[in-house]
Image (cartoon, rainbow, N blue to C red; front, top):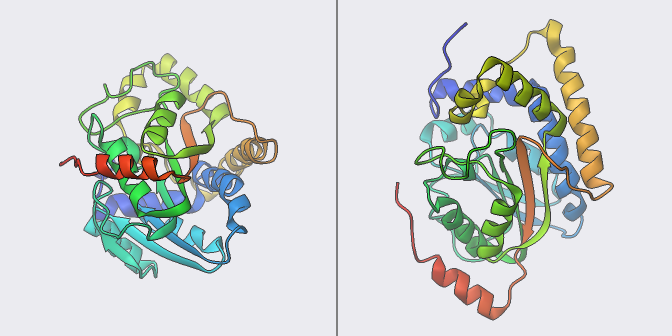
Length: 282
């Protein structure tokens, strides 16, 4: 078995890109994203979109499904941006989710997938959400994907100085505290999470799982095992159908997704932007 590449290195982004193209979890998460985002895509003739933590650029390519989309990718890592350039993404900015280098009201949609959990504790996630609120135009949307602590039992914030997991109420509270109305919030990756919890309890891997990035836990399967990915993607597509078509939240899962909207009053706007003057360094 080869060692995992260090996080936020060229080898890490190559591994992550390969996973995003074929792994059933990645494909299933895109289907879940479509279930929540496709219904709003037709509500505007054009979209100004920011992908915070654009990583390999896979989400940048996926977001081209939006009509008239003008898409910007932002990442803290120069290696990530170089990888994005190699996959023909051009509108790229190096910067931090904690202090977005854009004017107020610059975007109609901000997407942040697997970023919040890596921001500095105790309140880096709320600082990032306030910045997201600031750069969104009135009526704009934020789409969040992060991880949950379902089956792990540890309170939020105890995982480390820059890693956390969420319960639904915690993510909802952070979104509401920064001014967002909650359109949708649900667990995802539900049925597979039951198998993962059972496996980790039997093999005593739960402690390692708490500390390891999900991207490094996944593996690219050989072509002879591609049916496993197809099956997983199909199972997660059923979850997306349940969430999207039936409008019901899933009751558990190792992932969590939320769609929020900036529907502000003047008082809310002033309070949130004033709170945004406080920055977290790190």
